Image (cartoon, rainbow, N blue to C red):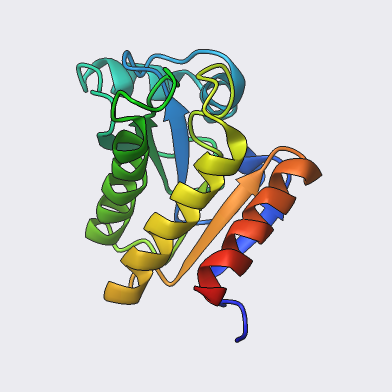
Length: 175
């Protein structure tokens, strides 16, 4: 079976992607932080923080949308992933919800293309292999039911993470 052309894996800087929406692995304040969150806030500019202050934060597993400001992306979808606590505290469902809610917002805002980082795999310590499988499984299921977005990119910081996403895509397609 051929790979799903609607799902792509890219290694690089998510802030440089010219897509309709990028997803920010945010903290619950939405006011910036470390990792991809800090990089997105720095690249988008100060206007992003002002808009985020108006959103009154975001709960784990939920998502909110802002303009992209100085980014090539039109929108930023902010989602708050779960902290890894051993897997018995609903982390998998919360992580899947991050992807679903982000896809729903992208679809509601007519986004044809969007890019996700590896949500919760940095300082939130979600096991990378499991996170990639949840991400790919959730996105694949959503795309099977909806025509939009047309293309979803998993933007990975390094080649090792990109390989985990490629493996998860291959596994989903076999099953």
